[in-house]
Image (cartoon, rainbow, N blue to C red; front, side, top):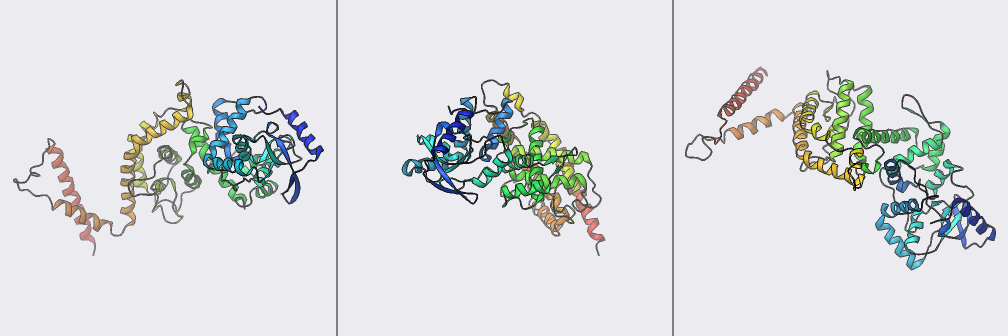
Length: 452
C-alpha cells in the first residue's frame, strides 16, 4: 500500500532537496526538472476524468467515497478501474515500458497525487517497474481543487499519446469544473456561470468550451442523464449510461423546446400539455432503456421520437410534433411497453438479491427488457412512421391505393385452389374486415370525386 499523505509529502520534499534530476520537461510553458520517484510514494487521482463514471457509480452504490489514504482495497480498486478503462492501450503501453522503459515523464502534486500520467502509473505497476519519472508540482492535492482540475486537463499525456476518455465522462467533468470554478445553481435549476468561471473552464478545455452556451448544453445533457437514472430506479449508476450518449443529446435539446414553447415544432392546432411532455419523456426513457435503434434497415429510427424537428416544419419529421402519430404511439406504449418497463428491477431490488454484482444485474435486466420489447417497438414505430408519411408524402395516397388493389386483385374465388374458401373459424370477423375495406374504399372514392 502507498505511504500516507504526510509521508509522501516528506519524501517528495527530500527528492526535491537532493536535486538529483534526470532531465527536464516543459510544463505549461516552463522547463521543469524531472525526478525518479518510488511508486510507493504515489497515488492515483481518483477524480481523473478517465474513470469518473466508475468512481461515481461505485461511491453511489457503496454510499461512501473511495479513500486511498486509509484503505488499500480502494487504491487497488482505482487501479482496476484505470486498467479496465483502456485495457488494450494499457497492455500496449506496458509492453513498451518493459522494452524501452518510461520515455515521457508524468506530473505529480507535492503530496504525491498523480495529475498527469495515471495510466502510466498503472502500467508501471503492471510492468513491475519500481519508480516513475515525474515533474513535482508545487500544489498539494485538496488545497486547490480548481487548480488541479486545470492541471489535469492541461497535462493529459501518455507514452503512446492521448487516449480519449469515455463519451459520458466529459459531462461529469463539466459539472466538476463548474462547481470548482464558482458556478452556482439557482433555485429554478438553472446554472449561473460568471465570466471568471467561464474563463477558467475555457483555459482548461479550450477546444470544447468556446462559449458559455456549450457549458450550459453539457450540464443540461448531464441533467437528462441523471433524471433518467432517477426515474428508472438507478440513481448515481453512471455506468448504466454506456452507449447511450446520443439519446440524451437529442432528448436534452427537445425537452427544453417542448416544455416551454412548441410553436413551429408541432402541427397547427396541436398544443401539447405538460402531461403530454411527461408521457413523452417516459416513452423516451423506455426506448433508451431498451437501447432501441430501429427496425431492419433502419438507422437511428428512435430519433423520430426523441429529436425535435426544425422550427417551422410543423413537426413533419417528429412523432411528438404530429398529434395523431404521438397519440397512437402513446396508446401502444401504455398498453404494451410500460407494463413491462415498470417490472424492471431497480438498483435497490437487485442489491437485495444476494450474491450478484448490482451493475451487472441491472445490465441483465436491460438486456431482458430489450429482448421482450424490441419487436413491439419496431411495429409501433413503423405505424407512427406511416402516419407521418400520410401527412408529408405527396404520393402516399396513390401508392397505398395501388398496394391495396394489387393485394385484393390477387384473391381468387376458385374453389379448386387451396386459398379459397379461407381456412378460418372467424368468418364473422373476416366479413367485418371486408366490409370496413369496402366502406373505406367508398369514402376515398367520394373524396376523390370532389377534386376537380
